[in-house]
Image 1: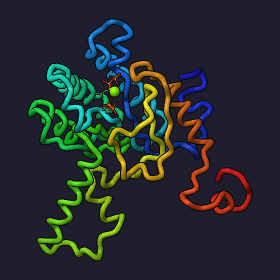
Image 2 (image 1 turned 180 degrees about the vertical axis):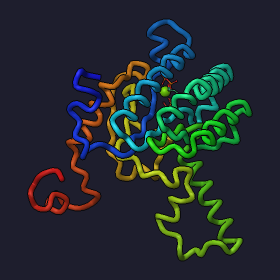
Image 3 (image 1 turned 120 degrees about the vertical axis):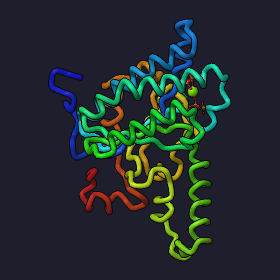
Image 4 (image 1 turned 90 degrees about the vertical axis):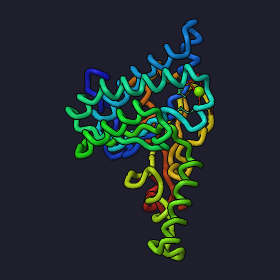
Length: 256
Ligand code: IPE
Ligand code: IPE
Ligand code: MG
């Protein structure tokens, strides 16, 4: 944060409504320091704190963090167990702050696969913050985009079978409402840290027209300046959604 405040240099008209982040590089951060991987995850939580605080301050409406993928269950059991403990501790510690700062906590993914102690912390935080309006803060937990879409298709099929849904009425909006992200706007900006250039099964449907920003920095090293840099880059992009430059700029040749 600069002396000019958290929004210095950011054009409010070009602020992404929804930022999604693939928080990657915790293991490499620890390895560089000859520390166990879990130390990297603990350092990563501090970066989460910084980014949540910053996004809330500058007026981002929705922040979604990829915390644990459906594929991450394949990691060593001790790492998975430690991540579940970190999640529970994080939610218990941050609940007060979320209530104070009007943040609504949300989670996407197959929550029923989480160990009971972690699932209860997640559902409890969602329940306690459900009326908050300042920012929606979503953690993707045991989340995989293909799994989410398969579950949506299964639920739609069930609705058709039970006579609650007409196959002919299914369109993109209908499909969206069957996803875990129902009610959230699609991400405007997606950031991935640690230099990897892939989506790793994150929000594949929702990122159809999302602007992508990649940084080599490892997640535990991320701070306000990095998010500000990504937002500034986003502000310079021309989002055409299939149209021509002339159409989106009203013929003025400028970014709208
Ligand atoms: C991201 O960091 C956190 C999770 C996936 C839980 P990693 O643990 O993937 O870190 P690297 O990629 O091994 O450095
Ligand atoms: C993606 O990171 C999942 C999260 C950030 C939670 P990974 O580290 O699991 O992704 P891959 O395996 O390198 O693609
Ligand atoms: Mg990784």
